[in-house]
Image 1: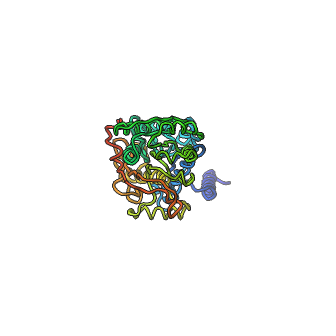
Image 2: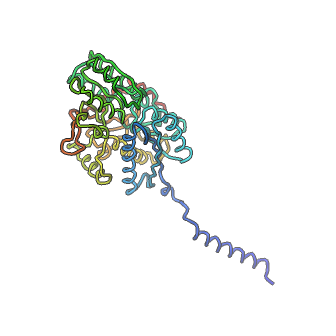
Image 3: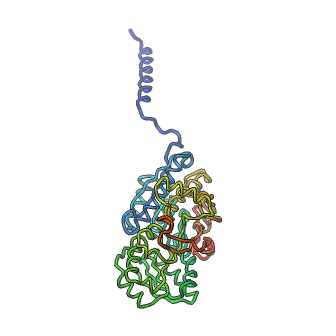
Length: 414
């Protein structure tokens, strides 16, 4: 007869054997924290009037994620980029931001090209205490009157862009401006800053505020012709700006007035006829900087990987991902408050800044202090992407002015 003790021993042996077999059959369980991906959520208008600019930002971020994942990722962990389409709609952008944070559990949020959406996203990320970088939404309050401890911005404020180019336009062409401006957050603050600078120089203006997705400009351009300005400032963005530029040329207005404004981006310049590749503008980053060797290396590597010459929007995406890496290494953490403190006054190294001088996130308002490249758009010379000549480089701090003038009162969580 088998004793109860013998039965117990056999049961224990059988149980150990079963557990061993189960362990061999089951997929490996991630035990090391270093194997858990760093998740970055990105919200941008991949459809709609600003889609070309958004696509470049996302492409720049994807390029950088691939680059870093071939090395050591972030804190030794692989990086995942989760991209959502805001469709150029504030409500959709907010919904997608909440989804990324609450369902997908992202560590960091990027977005949006549309300033109004970027601003609305910042309310959500602040509420949920998630670190956010705004790569390309320009309206001033994001790092001004409504600045937040968890939000940093890469692109310039509208004040910076206007300050860099207004004097240049007045000196070269005259003090009478006509503005064609999108009727949303970006356009409002941009025009306000241009007007402030213009009035300080003794100038005058007329303006037309139009929906962000305007495609027909005949009535507006007729008003501009009647006003007879020295300069027409096309403040529209993306496809709306392209359509305005085409109609400006069709009306023959390039013979009557100069053309310019804050931004005329590489994606847009390449999408218009040669006659519309004109005017005096800002570039927030430019690929042709012969005196900065790191730029040539970056451009060559980017072209090899994507077949494209990088634009400022590509650079925004590149800097956003690299900034998370740099801040996480400094903080040794991906917690929002720790990342924010690490980013304050953090310098970008030369292979990330990709421009001369000191480039850093100013502690007082979380605005990146980078150069503004003022110059002239023109038809291609040499290569299809050689459509802009830099005439002056304005330091970010010069264009931004002191933190005290931004209206930012930075408050960190206890």
